[in-house]
Every structure is written in C-alpha cells, then in structure tokens.
Length: 342
Image 1 (tube, rainbow, N blue to C red):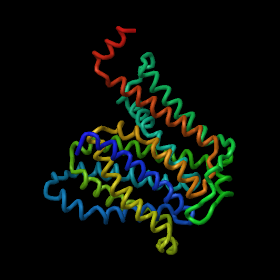
Image 2: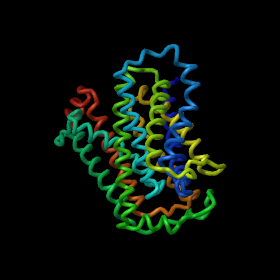
Image 3: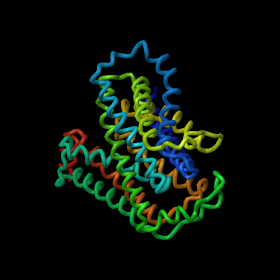
Image 4: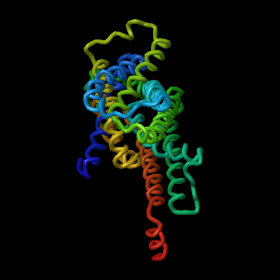
C-alpha cells in the first residue's frame, strides 16, 4: 500500500463507526435486546470473515500455541464481548452523539491505565507531562459535563427523521441534568471504552506473536460469538427477542457484523501495525462530527449545549495527551536544540 493510504483508511473507519452509532441506537430504540444484538453482530461477522481468512491466510498462518489462544480468548472477552454488551446498555440510556464523543477518551484511558501499571511515566515538570496531565483533566471535565450538564437545546437540524419516528420526550428525559439513567449510561460508556482501550493495547502484543491479522480478527469474532451467545441465553429467554424481520434491526445487525466487526476491526489492525495506535486515535473526532450532524438529521436527536461542550473538552483532552506523547517521543537531539534556542 502507498504511504498516504493510512489517512484514507482512518477516514473510512470513522465513517463506518459513525454509521454504527446511528444504526445501533435506532435498533435499540425499536426494542431490540442489546445482548441478542451483540451475539447476532458477532455471529454475522464470523460467517462473513471465515471464507476470507481460510482463503488468504490459512496456508501462510503461523502455528497457534495454546498460551496465545488463551490470550486471544481473554482479550476477545474483555475488549469485544464485555465492551459491546456494556456499550449496548449505555447506548440505550444515552444517545449516539454521546457514544461517539466518549470514544475520544480512548487514548486518555489507555494512558491512565499504563500510568497505573507503571508502563508510562508522568513528569509534570516537563511540557509534555503537563500537557498529558491537562488532557486527563480535560477528559474528566468533559465526561462530567456530558453526564451532569444539559444547557439549552439546539434543534436546528431535527426536522427530518429517516427512521420514521422521533422519540423526543425520551431523549429530552435522558438529557435532563440529574437523570439517573443518563448518568448511568455515561459511566457505562466510559467503562466500555476502558475495556476497548485495554483491547487495543493488548492486541499490539498479540500481533507480534501472531501476525496473521485476518485470522486473528476471525478468531476473536468467533470466540466473542460463543461468549456473547452464552451471556444472551442467560439474560434473555423471550423467543420473540431472537426473531429477526426485514427492518432496521436486521440492517443494524448485518451492518455492525460485516462492516464494523468484520471490516473495521481488520482495518484497525492494519493501521495499528503500519502507524501505531496513536495515529488511529487521532482520527476519533471525525466520527464525532459525523455523528452529531447525522443523529440530529436522521434520528431527530436533540443536541444540547452540554453535549457540545463536553464533546469539545473530550477532543481537547485527546489532543493534549497525543501532543504530550509525541513530544516525549521526539529525538533527544531535537529537544536539546529547542531548549537551547529558548
């Protein structure tokens, strides 16, 4: 691939994620159980990926040690099954815009986890360390703003609703400051992104030992399908919830299974291998911008001032941490020259 292709790939990834936020929210608003949704999503992704994995990488794939298989099983449970199940509960109680906004916490959450595990070091007296600390504070402030502050509503775009109905009262109830369901959804969304961040970090180590990206993605999807099926059967016993019809629920399942879990996970793995997880994380605000506009137009979601302010704080925190991280990774000679010129 050409050198500039990663830029095109990350734009495609964020566009796919923006559509995922919208379709998932529409499916849940139409009454679909989120645990059943996760199973169908992972199962459809597995069925879609298996032929490609066997055709392109089966003969060239390295052997899979049992210890590596156990690691893949673990990160599949943490980063895919648990993350998606918690994400579904959070999305039911919040909005597509908030789901897109909280993805900007990923690099900050990853940095904070690495700091707790003493993988990262925070030197507050340096410019880079101060920037990363400011980024963490900005993300915490943004998350608190999303959870607790409503502000005036911005309804300029909420006139046309592609999915045929508008749940204005429910959305207004969610965005009310102090709403227990909205606050719970915000913190569950952050927890889901924490698991997702752990998956991104741990996957970088597994790719080094098992470089067959397509087979790795397929194996994670298949293991997640089994895990999510067990959870869904334990939680949902109503047969009606397992039936699929020709509606937005089926579209959401197929789209999230094939495009998101199948295609995007592979594209993410490729980008991480080529340019690293930081490069991928820098593109996250694109999905937020796409989702804010699309959710207002297509779903009729009422965007509040608090949502916009909180989202901006999350994006600011994201870039502060990324800037600080890039400063620390600069060659020492460049830093010495910059300090000498000051």
